[in-house]
Image (cartoon, rainbow over all chains, first blue to last red; front, side):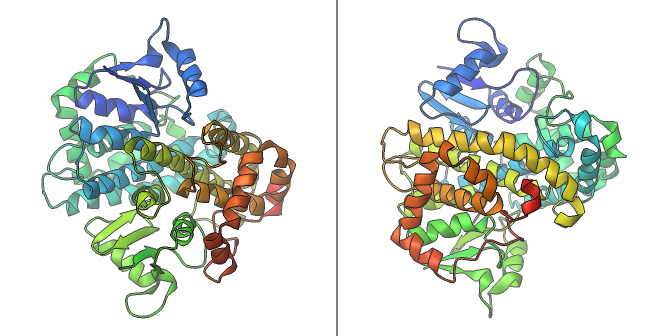
Length: 239
Length: 239
């Protein structure tokens, strides 16, 4: 039985962190809301959310038979050991999950650089506040988070350049996505800081060179970065 | 061996969600950063963070021997089944954790009502943006989150009024804290919506009447709400 992934079509968004894990592991899955037909598409996703006994607050969510799991980090916590992208022991799983929850916090802050006042308003309606928030984000938060993850790799005693243990995990895939997205959204700032995060850059390249990931990135299944997602290319925010 | 909780003294903040669980369960713990002396206090907390092989990004974190766990939801995921405040089966644990992660998202949005531009700025320096964000928060986000949790209790087939299963869990304690904090921060809005969330109000009262919780709330261990924490009483934001 394939996993069913439910997420908004048209953006990478938060769903991409799950999609990358499913793709890297070569797992059989259906991207339900991007398909059309009976039981497919966005309507089916919203209906399923409403009707679920254990209702997700928001997409993405993963369905396997009667089991529905929401919240990106929770989905990856469940999937990781099952698809070979995370450790199995409880203590190592807690640490891996802790890192993913820090990724979650970072993603929320990245999103709010262009939407500091309300998700319900257009970016154009909150541009001044977005500029102010982005200025603080780029000088304070970005270096804090990236410096943290750089140290995590450095402190990982395996010395293999991964965040956790000696092999690829879902956290590494999320680091790849963060680096790719931040370079898209803030090319100047990321290029200026290039030398500060050698381990994160190397990890990005290592993930991009993974055969399954490379095939995925070259396929039509990878949605391009665009100005509806988490990472948006608004040059004026970087000034 | 008692658990060691590390969190900023002087505020309830995110640490309070962990403290409430430890208190409700009657667990033996030390609130390290609020104590003074060798190996105690904020300096000891910051040193431990720096030196940890598995470094937390931020407080709160919990220490038990050599194990350090950070991120509130991750701490509660670990603690829940161990201290009798959460289910033990994997599927039920995932659902409980998923709810706690939605609490986490809600808490971040509540925090950003008074700090929409930057945590490093004073509230007074971002008051206009805070007013704009709070207006959207109170009309859009607050009802969305509270309506969601109200439905979660309604859909819980046990009919006992808890969020998960038939007995008190750490999610219920977090709902109590959310209701108490929101009433402190936004008394008018919460009073106006009183009748919309009967199950959340009843759950708040049930938790407050729990003997361990009541003893804790009456003790000096419970820090009062204040204008340095997540929930702040700024009347001008509610206008």
